[in-house]
Image (cartoon, rainbow, N blue to C red; front, side, top):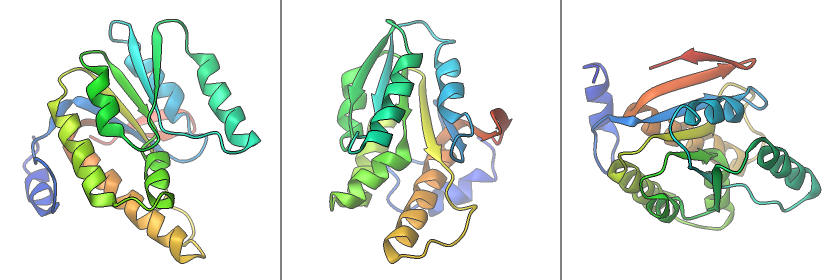
Length: 187
């Protein structure tokens, strides 16, 4: 691990462990930046079957369309687990298979709108992630590069997403940032 990360990792209060997880790749980016498609390519480099842990929920037509688009790209080698709230449990179910979680910011949204306590959920997720040894690809939105949200809930979400991304990026063995469909290596 790069020594520059150690003081930062130590500063992350509540982290289950501060070790770098070499089997974890975090793919960040903005909306329609190619995060999911690239994450699918990365996981396909590992032997199938792959587990796709979906955090999105189809509450409206537009979201159901997005979910259908994602499902359409995956073939028979994929097992889909829907986990809008319990990522730790879904990771445990996936056992030794390569996993793609799409996406952490939708999971965070579900936690917030469901009135769930965020720190214990993130801690449980980090513990489950640290227990894994198989390849794990995480997709998350970078939401802190735009305008300041107008509402308190929007600002809280932006801040929580930023903190979550920092925690996971600090522990991930590899971090990529997607720009116009192109991966930029951050770590």
